[in-house]
Structures are given as C-alpha cells and as structure tokens.
Image (cartoon, rainbow, N blue to C red; front, side, top):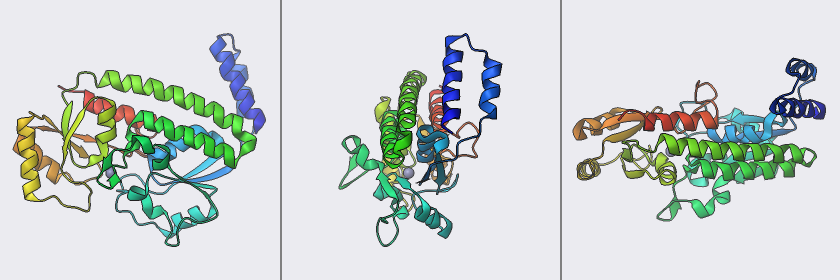
Length: 299
Ligand SMILES: [Zn+2]
C-alpha cells in the first residue's frame, strides 16, 4: 500500500521534471495493489464528502448520507445511514442548525470521532440573531479551512499515514487558491453582482466575491414566505434594479419564477450541493466552477 503511493509520487515527480519514462512508470503503478482504506468516514452532504476524499484519498472510505437532489434541511435519517455512523471512525457534519439530524437521539455517540465544521470556522460565521447561516462550504476559503480540519483529524485517527494526509492537505490548499482566483476572475463583471436568492445558500459566496445577496425569498424550505414579504422583496428589487433571482435545482421553481415574472429579472438556477452522480458537479472544485460560470455568464 505504502509502496503504491510512493510509486505514484515518483511518477508525478518524474512527469513534472519532464524527463519521466512515463509509460514504464504507469505500468508499475497499475500493477501495484490498490491500498485498502484505513479509515471509515461518514459525511452528511456531498460537498463535505468531496473535501474529505480530497484529503483522504484511497486511505479513507467515505459514505455520504444525503443523496443527490434531496434537501438536507428537512432530512430524516434512514436506518442504513444510522448503521454507517455506528461503524464509522469519524463523522463529518456542517452545523447543528443544518445537519443536526445526523446526531442520534441519545446524543453524539462515544464510538466515532465527531467533527462539526462550524466550530472550525466559527470566527467567519455569518450570524443571524442567535444562530448563523450554515452554508459556509460555498466560500472556497472556508472550504480550505475545512480541508485543514479534515487533514488534522485523519492524522489523529490514522497517525501512521499522517504524512500522506499532510501532503494531500497541502495540494488541496494550493488548489483552493487557484479555484479562488479563477472564481474571482469569472465573477469580475457579472451583472448578477446584486441578486435575490430563494434561500440563503449564497451569502458566504457573495461575501467572498463582492456580490450582494439583497434578499432571500424564504429563510428555510419549511417556512413559506408571506405575501407581504414577497411584496417587500419585489419593491427592493425595483429600488436596487436587481436583474437576477437565484433558484435552486433541488427546490420548487414556482416562487422563483413568479418573482422573476413580477420583477422582470431573470432566473439563474444554481446548485449548492452537487453530487457523485452529477457530471460536471461531482467534485467540490467542479461544483464551484459550475456555479460561478452560471453566475458569471450572460449579461
Ligand atoms: Zn440550505
């Protein structure tokens, strides 16, 4: 197992040095037995699972609880997922106010290590009254912090592989830097600088890239907005000449379409969650690129 990793590093170093006998190296890598995962991890939502995979590589087997296209806000955990938690070495969740359903009725179990990312980024949380907006993974810089937390936690659980996790955390952090620069460039002159969103998923993203989430139509999917509130949003949109309403793929479109119709804005449907089965959105990096290009395109 350790040998195959070293072979791979050698292959990359070789290729980067531009003097590799590439075909030979690939042959050797392919013949090595793939490493069996050392750590069993559970992640509540896909973006978290993807970040854990970036750091854990083949050493970590990740089970994602919420499948693609399912709303994580009002989720009910199935018995199979509860079993995966029982057998896990580590559980990664976003925040109690978001995916707190992953915590069993009797409280956090003694078995697996338990990581709540909100604690790792607590100084950067956007507060709302006595709670906070939980969608911080949509800010790549905060996702970078999540990656570092994953690296530290995996090294603690599986100390024999700590150098492996440290290397991958470094690579992840460098890729986050490039992603951040690419998103900034894509969004530099979008006409969606100010927008209204169906729900407050894009607050962190907006803050990072100098966009303004002027209003949200509903604070959470379980709270239907009043006609009075929608009226106020429409007035705001007119006053600020807001041209874009952000809908979400996994959510009903009627309200978003109605607001767009009444205000003359256009709808951009984004995806805060992605998923293993969604081509072009099946890694954290791809997902962020997808959303930025939809927001940055078309003026
Ligand atoms: Zn949400």
